[in-house]
Length: 566
Image 1 (cartoon, rainbow, N blue to C red):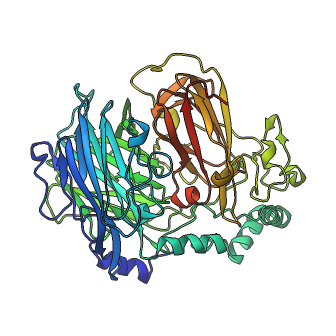
Image 2: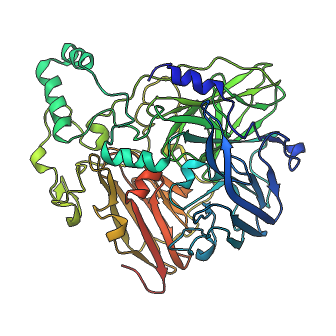
Image 3: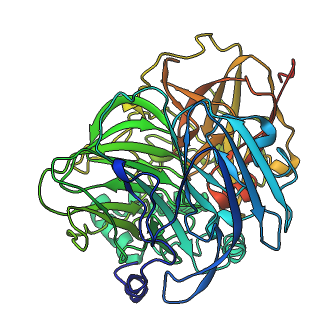
């Protein structure tokens, strides 16, 4: 979608109920009269309700917390015990999940596992002690409320001094908004999964490929995609056709702005609170030094750009030394739009906004079919149990809910990602991330649990091992054990996988601990593993954090109990 009338119309609206909520260190706790509140302390009252917003020129009803979108930024302190009374003023059950926070299972906020949810007119009191620090967020875990605005930043300040210095501190929360009822969006995806994909290839693309590759190879590749009932443009299920991309609840035209004095070090806490959108983030003219991932400090690494999956967080330090404005540019992975804001020494300033990068196309190699781009794939093998030593679960065989199996998956930890390779910019990879601490557990995993991420694009069903959540048995972890979870992505989509209640200690391809995360991104054709210490009794959610994928079945219960390993 080019610079369309829709994009222009989006530019007319400043962005609903929010205008900016970065705080200088001296200003913490004071808040801003025209932005969401920042709430500090250990006792909070949060009210879930409905608020009118206007992001596109048309008023719509959003689900909000204390009347704002995003909800108020909560600033807690490591070691404190916090109490939160959450009041539900909606006509349906609601909930709040504290994403990435270690807590007792009955405080996790997942209806059906942690508790029954908060009924209309009801109140639920959460109380737990904070055992960590860093940048996190919170959101609804009920139906599709997250898509309609029920999310917000969450910061836990450390007890000990941090290993890096900064002068200002801004949250940069990225998200996606649609004027459509999200249930209608989901229904469209079930009927026509490519409904929002306006990046389809055309006859002109075929003619170009024929000129570049020759008639037979170009036609063979088209036939290959057709036999798989897939398209190389299937990067994102939901696009800028319906989404307005927001930065701190503000549209690109609204231009959320964080102020600075030249020479200051600014900490930017990026949070991807979107329902379905990955973002590629850069600030032209500034290097970004990544100092934390998913709330945990890492060895600093300086980059020009990074991809942030849904639910991930990255903290970066930037040092603008000129009396000039800088654009914070977060383009959607499928290039159908972007969120945008500005760092500036004075309000009202702006800098040039980059044009989105070219349209992204998948290759067979991207999906773990390396070397098969030009007709070499054995289609007869697809759908059977093993490929080149890789064993697929029997539940995938002949399963009408599985349309693809990867043949040669790899960790790809040093891969910048689809659409980010060889772009002339230094792009962060998972291989760059290294926690400041050694493996906190130290034990060799006693067993490995392997799960395949599966789905069928045309049916729009998503699952683990070809089994939807409704039909799946819980994964059982034995309390106290150290185990390895190995994930294989058999689909053509990228999936951010989130385990509640416990850390996911990502390993490299040699089984060495790299970085502690709460959400592990799984590009297509990857096989990645992480270690888990099952130190939290109870029932926990384990799922893809793409909202409609989770709703469509890519979800498991993890049950941690005494001697319950299976």
